[in-house]
Image 1: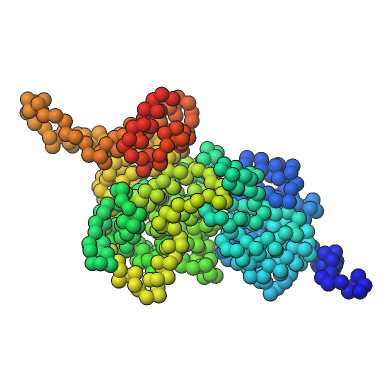
Image 2: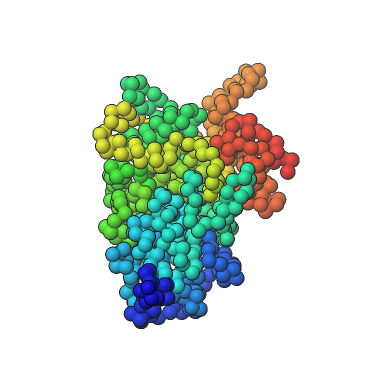
Length: 599
């Protein structure tokens, strides 16, 4: 058989036939690109120096991964290394967002490309597709990749490990690519599915650990004023519910208990018919008003809900509390994308969403969040908090309200921690992961059995603590009291150092006021007072006092050494062990106090 009859034809045949049909789109002009941030310049230089097929960049949400990737695409298009660009994104909405960002710098990407199209129009430099699209027809994307020398940008690359079909599809489709750029802004996933094109190296205990070529974490971005400082306002409170056996139980959010009880108390607090959510939403709206009156006039708020029915209920609560309707986004469809875009360009106060706004969606004016979902994997939490950190001008802060649940408090305290993808590591089930949440929602939608087995009875809210830079501030304050208002009224435009100083000052004032009130209530004749021993503190009071003492010692070391508060707390945890101070026991706090005094 002659060479002309070979099938499949060689790559050169694809290239010749494709080029004969195309008039190339104009190349982007590098000089028109916006100035790069320091981390972007450093990563770009490293990329151009290596000239390797694969490059993985980890950068915190809001740091500018899209700009960095598009600059690389422009460099490679201009110097002829590649002729086409394919971007793979997690959702349909992000496809449009990528195409719009690329068009602003002269790179035309087809966001409407469908697998049935086979090729993009000659008007485009390439296309934006989703991981699901690639998984459904990898052969289509492999042919497109072979036809022209292609750069593939894999946005939020951890999604290539969501399922075997997606991972296999990505690998099959893009193995022929000249260059592959992997991006992620969140902790890598916690399963054992290897992620295509990510480099793994054998590390501790012989386990394979992912290796990034460029890393720019939240702590780095906060130091460079690229992202906003985030204050976590954790709300506890009394909860009551009825079990499937008809037994009524009560528990206080934040108190030590089994995972099952934590999950049930947590769910009771999030019930729209109780008092906890209205009180927290009222506090969050008050914080939003403070930010709007203090230099962020268009500041917006986002409530992240677990399911559609609850999201609608939260929207009704917001309208009742504020007199203004909230925008609601329930699914990843064309209508949802339009609603997100409308909200982003407006001055509407509140958006209520399920899932899709948790990753990648760019609404820079979001500054107040309510974490009203029971999803609590590190990946999901980081994605959700990433919606609030994008800085537009110096001094902007973000405030996120969340239930005082130990696991969430730990994630809030460790927000700056970088995580790699480790294969083969034993996994501890947390009891609140996405799989369990989705299964509960499916059960509820299918038969309503969940409602028959469980009934939330009541829940009240109080501000338990404020978490910032790994440290915990404040003592319990009932919702609607002046003590709570002191924290809700923190100025909206502050640097990270100013936030820490003001929180320490607020905590000291709060404790001093409590001591004055206690002295008035217990005033006795001098003789009786001298004879009576001091009243013993409860465990909760001791923990508050020890947290305050630890924060003061950490602040003193910060002023002596210039080290960030979070790094000092992390070093104490390394030396002493145990969880973040928000979750630490009395003994652990006492050990850290003794240790920091010797540093």
